[in-house]
Length: 279
Image (cartoon, rainbow, N blue to C red; front, side, top):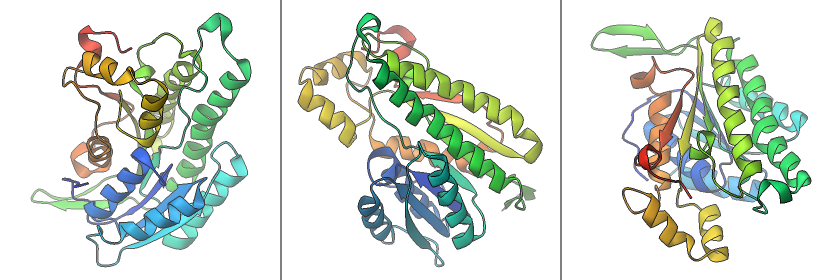
C-alpha cells in the first residue's frame, strides 16, 4: 500500500472498508493526507480494526478515523452513516461506494436464481443509489474544497464520488447474468447522477477493474482452482490487478489532477477487453 497522490485535506467516506478494495482504498486515502476517514462496513469489527490500522499510514497531523456499521441495502442505515460522518467531521469530500456482492450461484440465464438476481441488484444497485443519494444531499450543502497550486487557487467543487464497478460493467461472460446486470446498471447510475449533480459541482465517476486479488477472488480460486490459469490466459499482464493499483486509481480520481473527469466508467483490465474474452 503506497498512494502516489497527495490530497492534503478533506474527509473520505468508504463503504466496504473492512476488506478488499474498500479497505485498501481507505488506507490510500489516509496516506494521501485526508484529515478524516470513515470506515463503513456491515462487518463493524473488521471496520474498527481497519480504522485503527490506518493510523500508522496517515500523513495528516490532524488525522482521525472512525468506524461505522452500515447495511447499504437499508436506506435508513445508509442515511445514518452519512449523518454520523457529517456530525463527526462536518463534511464529506470523497465518497467511495465499494460495498457489494459478487457473482453468487453462477448459472446460465435459463437456470438463473431470481432470488439471487433480486438480492444482487438490491445490494449492488439499490445500495449504491442509497449511498449516492444521501451523500450528494450532504455535499450540495457544503462549501467547495479549494486547491492551491503554482497557478493559484481554484475550486475543486463540493465533492467527488467513486462507484466501484467491474469490467462486467461493459462486457458479459457466461453464468454471470445477475452480477453483470447490476454492474451495467451501475454505469447508468453513475452517468445519470453525474449529469444531475453538475449544478452542485459534484463529480461522480466509476472505476471498473477486471480480476482483483481480494479475499473475494481468493474464495473464488478455492471453489474453482482452474480460475488462476484463466486469469493468466486472459490478462495481458498474466495476473490479476492488486488492490493497491485499484486504490491508487480511485484516490487519483478524487484528486485535483482529475478535476475535469466526470461521469466516466474507467476500465482497469490491462487491455484485456480490447481483444480478448474476459472469462
